[in-house]
Length: 349
Ligand SMILES: Cc1cc2nc3c(=O)[nH]c(=O)nc-3n(C[C@H](O)[C@H](O)[C@H](O)COP(=O)(O)OP(=O)(O)OC[C@H]3O[C@@H](n4cnc5c(N)ncnc54)[C@H](O)[C@@H]3O)c2cc1C
Ligand code: SF4
Image 1 (cartoon, rainbow, N blue to C red):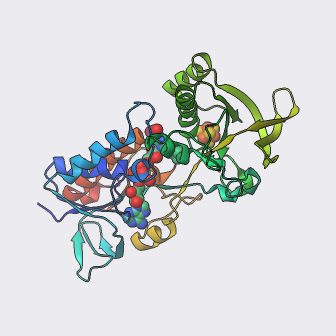
Image 2 (image 1 turned 120 degrees about the vertical axis):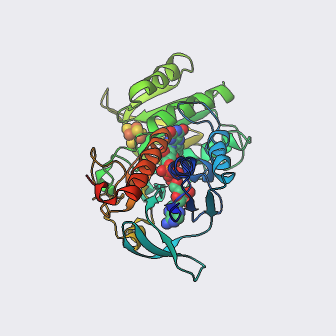
């Protein structure tokens, strides 16, 4: 058996990669900078996942347990990789906090994404008004069991607005990409709020609704069963009138200004490139694509390749991705890495 394959990042894609490789009898070293495994769904405390409806702590927690209990997987948390050198089949590297040099034949980068920081959209009032929150904060309110509350005074909201595309599809701030999951996540969140708080009105402000594929069912169910209201609009700003938050913008269907008061405004934040990507690219000698995500070598021929032979990639490290696609990419990258161990010359063929 060769030296352990190095996997960097223990979110859904890294967990899937580690489990796939270990299941074939291949030793794995799984490294994560965070203090626990699970990636964004665990570290950010997601509630029920789309499309399965399973709690993140059960679904992704189960993936963590499966890897933690596997005898062929060595796990190092609160750790990063330094001094990476060599060529496909014979890399050397060090881990933070260690002096010794380790060896690996292949590496898979599963380093994921960063949540968009909405302070970069100051007109939306995040960081200024405590009752302007993010989708991840509302997920945490639900998953912790405390329920959806206004952070200013703990009251139960009677009117909630969810603003889509915050930090996505916004060329003014250099983020032209669609973050892919936030429409579906937000329609699901709106239904969860309505279910928990039947007296609460929930409005979704949108440019376009992209509940693509089978997720379109969320869009219809949220309206027909849960009476969530949709406003096609451009948001100008969120202000405070001394009692409530006020969402101001233009209803782009009727082309009129709209001003509506709310207790809680939820920003559907997008998926940014991992803030570490410049360092990851320089450590591992791989390229970034023009938005700052990790560059894939090819779209069809060599699934999971980066621009450096022997270094592979999976999941949201390459761009906005769902959990199930991240898991599938982890399995594909595991297969590509295994193939490179037995036939390195064929890796990019
Ligand atoms: C608000 C919100 C809700 C969402 N809800 C859903 C949902 O319900 N269903 C769904 O399918 N998708 C959902 N998603 C998308 C989901 O979060 C991603 O698909 C998934 O997290 C991608 O998994 P990943 O393993 O590729 O990356 P991540 O989950 O980002 O994991 C990356 C891991 O790498 C580690 N890491 C990062 N940099 C380094 C480094 N330099 N060294 C070592 N370790 C490092 C991190 O600590 C982390 O553990 C949601 C996204 C958002 C923003
Ligand atoms: S998925 Fe929806 S909310 Fe997210 S960026 Fe795309 S259109 Fe906007």
